[in-house]
Image 1 (tube, each protein chain N blue to C red):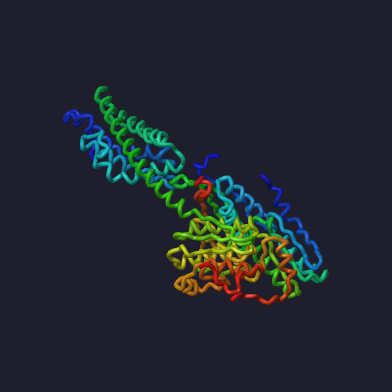
Image 2: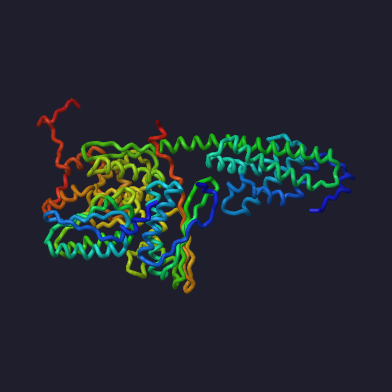
Length: 301
Length: 149
Length: 134
């Protein structure tokens, strides 16, 4: 990039906005380097400083483009489009680290100081009034950046809440005590790694608490059982057995039985087609059988 | 305790059976301090035990460095690096598969340890020793029942 | 911060005789040498006191790696050769989850929720008929 010297600037008489735009392009590298050392970047890009510098360059480019468009206070400026996702991620990362919106705002604002310092140092020949006007413009531009970050962080925050609500539903895993020594967990919905870990922990804890000899895993409400889900189930079965209890898997449809067969796992797992059958099996093993009260068996339904 | 600073927090020698006990205890304490749940603690300690034993038995001894780390989303983790100057592993893929063993273990050491951690990296060449780096993160979702109240 | 456990880990494991059963209680973090010595102690105790069962209480054990898992499996296999049955009792949930993830399901090992349940299991007839309903 050609060096714009004082003479050239005087000849062109650039407006403060043009001056700031040119400065952002010219000093892109130094700005990015300074920003990489600011708390915001240091906290978000922990793995590599190069990544932080790269992110800084992208933001400097965006600001230069916004300045180039002449609308330093326009948060919808097309210059921000390429960095919007990056800014959202940055804000979300800080929010997850426990920072309030005000704290994130302050961290973004902290980027202004090194940028303004560089700008002032970059205009040694300019009149103090021109320097002041440029600094004001850059400050306004950085304020716009702060607004964009806040805007994206609010959107991201809502998305996070939505995701958490879904997770919460999925993670709700009630373990029911069906009988003395028999606990059951009815699984409803998809069973991914994270959830099956929660299921396993919750079930094993209740096996200990209830001193349950039988644990029934009812998968009637699990829509699909692929090999990964089957593997999670078998792990739970194995863990229950290691603790000294027996696991019964109920609600197995024919297709699911096939999946488990195809996996070729030789764990001795007792399966039943319904939760009722599983309970009857466990009761029988505990020495209690279910018998009809009337020999004829003609009940009301 | 500040978790942002990355850097080696401790280096422990792995020269004898007794050192394995020290490594397990140190990793347990460090994992608890970082905020790991009981299951994640147990997994990481067990992985550390497997890897430390590998370092001792196959690497002829070495050391482990523990380091607290933080990812881009502010999640805290613990990174363990096991180093030895032993004969190295000629076939990494084979060494990572279950059932493989050159000693008298069950052959679950490396492959088993890999399943117990979130990240696993191994660097080894014949004659130049082995370095195994594992990282786990304390990012378990909160208990649902407490959240629903 | 407690660093005394490493000493406890090197201490011998108490082996107690209860009628026909040996009761072994493991605690905390076991030193490799201790685990190996335990294996010999149990075999010798079975021969000396002619017990028919061994209960290993691991409710106080915080981690089981493949080494200790192998020792437990070998104790069970060795006892079987000496005509004694082994039951491992009281495994903690976190330990069970970890063993399964490690790939160590210890299929040959009998387990029970507690020492009481283990003693009950050993009191049952040796080759009880498997009552499979339906």
